[in-house]
Amino acid sequence: MTTTEIRRRDGLGRSGIFTMDTRIIRIPAVVDASSLFPALMTVSGTNIPLAADEGFVRTFHVQCGDQPVTIHPLLDNPARSGDCVMVANWHTALENPRNYVTYLLLLKEKTPPDTTWYAPAAALPSNLHILCFSGFDLFDFRAVDLKSSQGIFCIPEGEFPKKTIGSEICTCDGCKNGDLQQHNRLALLREAALIRRFIEQGQLREFVESRCRMHASHVMILRHLDNRYEFMERYAPIARSGVMRLNSAESMNRTEIRRFAGRVICQYLPPKTDVAVLLPCSAKKPYSLSVSHKKYQLAIANRAHELIVTSPLGLVPRELETIYPAMHYDVPVTGYWDAEECAAIAGIISRYFERNSYRRVIAHLEGGALRVVEMAAEECGITLEFSCREHPAGNSALAALDEALAGERRLKDDRLHGMCSYQFGIDIDTRGFLARGRFPAIFYSRDMVQCFSIDTATGMLRPTFDGWNLIPAGYRVSIDDFVPEGDVLVPGVTESDPKIREGDEVLVIGARVHATGRAAMSGLEMQQSKRGVAVRVRKVKRV
Image 1 (cartoon, rainbow, N blue to C red):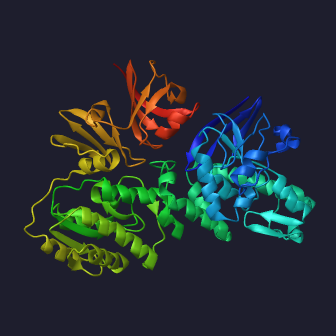
Image 2 (cartoon, helix red, strand yellow):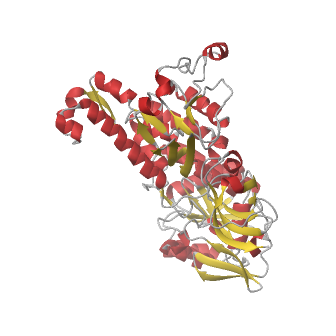
Image 3 (spheres, one colour):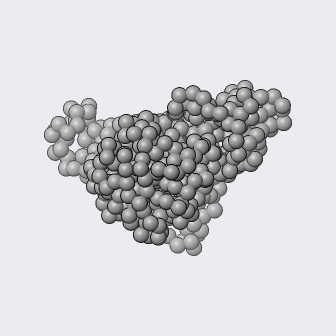
């Protein structure tokens, strides 16, 4: 009997527990496959090439009748929740990144999410990062043992001649003993343990971006996966803990970055004003706490809608500055914006202004941000006004900004309206709401009843039960007739909104109770899984 319990998710990458009979394995893991799956030593028909045509596959493919369950892109998938599934010859796909991603999507779409994925004879210290990023969990020593027999020294940075073992690059027990096989195995085990840690920290993407630079095929796989946005978005959490480090060109195309920009353009509802001011970003997050932005806000004095121009997010309305990833990203600042970066950011800004018209758009910017805004203005046909072209936080620039806004009416600070539209896709009536607390720990109440608060960890809104009454539909999880005593587990879920992503605030609805909490997996995964935590419950109310 096998079970798979996924405890942490980071995109397609997962960590958790795979249990087979009495053996408990923390995944991702490297195991002795011959002892874990002895049936594979004798059965035939499980080693079908990935590129084989459908007739060949259907003729020669055989299920061994035991674990693991062999799957192939061209076959119907017999796997059930809890199984270990095996994709034979996956190492051959690594050299063809386009096929790699095509095969992966075909397999993922028809495999239950709570299964353990085994890639036999594929794992090396240098490719384990991209295998785990693709959703594989279980590996063996066959690939590194083959390298050992060929006299090849393996480390995460690549493969080298056997004589490297004495060069002090590594000081493991294998290197001390001159045992190449022991070194290669230890290097693979260490990499698996390191990947587990990065998954648990929610930083697998950053780790993969740093590791993949040594292999062009790995960079290509990462890029091809990023280009499958609709697929990858389903697996990306709505928010992560810690800082999102955007240190490479690939960071521009991260799912979370594209999701933020997409929601700003298509879902977010700006305040009712016809004057906008474009401002530079700041190193300190949220921007309002920085010295420069305190000066900007003093000069603007609520007479315009504030839009922050930043890379790689593109455009951050002031109301969304706490929402992940706007408050959580870190990017190396050099003052230079390359052509690809400029084109991407200009496209986001242009699409925003095509959807949202303003009578006046004032650019209070310098350098690369100013060039990007000029590109966007030309693209979407708006006329810019300029309150400065350098030193935006300087006294003369601030005075010019103040003068440019002379006579404009003040608008209400309605952060709640903008956040609700971005997070829940609703146009909430915020009349009568009062805000209290110290930014960003803000609480929103109406008629002395608290409805929302800002989660200082993610910057997202947390609705109370009264707040959920203002959200007419969506982000609901229905459960059987029971009262949760702790978190809601998947077997208790009867229905879930497919829009739900891991980390979303959700309302749990049962016959006898309502509960508020945070989704521990996507809505689709709640429907397709048989095991695991569905919702981390915060409060329960009997009805």
